[in-house]
Image 1: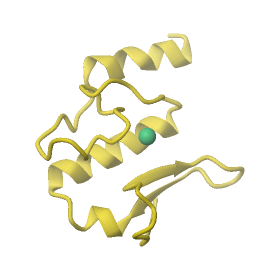
Image 2 (image 1 turned 45 degrees about the vertical axis):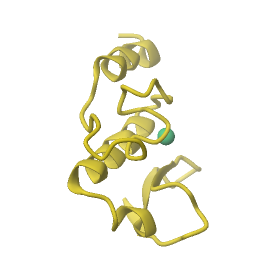
Image 3 (image 1 turned 120 degrees about the vertical axis):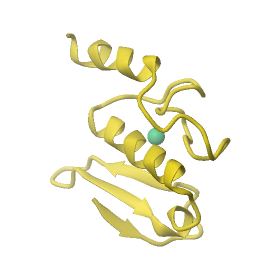
Image 4 (image 1 turned 90 degrees about the horizontal axis):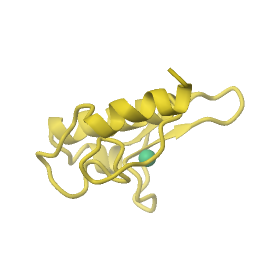
Length: 91
Ligand SMILES: [Zn+2]
């Protein structure tokens, strides 16, 4: 996991799955302004991507932007997130 700062990057975080990287990148431009719940949501979301989970509905922590809409949103795994794991990994 590593930090970077970019005001032109709308992402608060992203999972770099390029060869040899396997790194979660957190954009301090956005993360520094988030409350603990939002930070938790972003990190949980990016860990989800590291497990090959795709984006899900707004109720899921795998929502496209888990910290965007509601500072008190679900920052923990929701049923959609939990159910998508076996769909990806086959068990
Ligand atoms: Zn994402």
